[in-house]
Image (cartoon, rainbow, N blue to C red):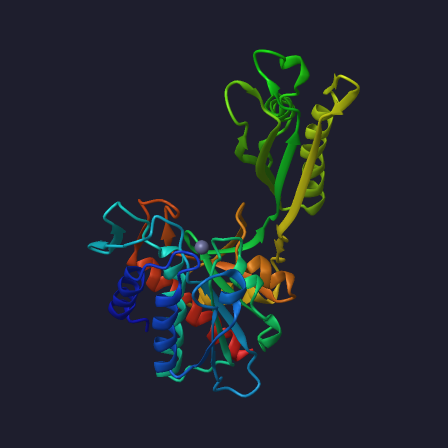
Length: 381
Ligand SMILES: [Zn+2]
């Protein structure tokens, strides 16, 4: 039932509209037009002003055609990571990739076109369904900012799907909670040649802290990384200050808190070892830690209604759809935190966040079909 040629054309059109985070204006206007022409009522919310972008989230509603059928949410994101200033998709048979100078942006336009095509077919063929609510977010790649600023109180749907993960016919039901961490180590500046003993090197203190720290993959559920280090002024100055930024994630909230505490403690213990007396005054090295919860975990049980719906939809297509966990967050984490029963459906994107990104068009067709069947099963409940 899915129109593969129409789906491919729409995918090529949408990926050709560059939409890096905070500059989703052009794609939002295009999608607004498409959704309206499909018969949806469409609004753009105020999230753009709140995050400093050029558009808000696009929110569309399609009325159901089956009394009593439950409303269903379908969501994807409009923004892409870079490089994405100009995107020239290349088509080789059924594979779409780029010319190697940019990402493709199949993350997440593969998800967006699957949503659009599924709704189109549902309406064209008058397939029974409840109200459909479509949320196309901004700034997903920038800390899920669009979803965080979307008023989920406006949704009638209590369950639905985010389409935003690589692979096909797989359902992400577990995703980590994440903390963003910033540690600022304060030492003391001194002339490196004349009186280094009157200084405390913030770089050395940070190094000791980091050397004592568990990082990388800590267990099957937990990871930690320090990704940015900035500090010091010159080769001949004992550095007074250094800032280290990183993160930790875990499918277990307890492990997330424990790892956060561990990283903080490593910095505090290293700083505590350093003090210096200069004249009458004693200086103690110190560290300031800032911990921000980026998002909470996604944890949908395998017997949850949304999982059963997708798996019934897959069976109707003669397929199966396994659940799995992932180490990445998505807008699904935000919707789940707000009390919606959502999972993240794989939508055919491949080698995402690289200039080698590609999609296989039959995967897009399969995904759109699975969305259609899931909505149909939901409408029959
Ligand atoms: Zn994505």
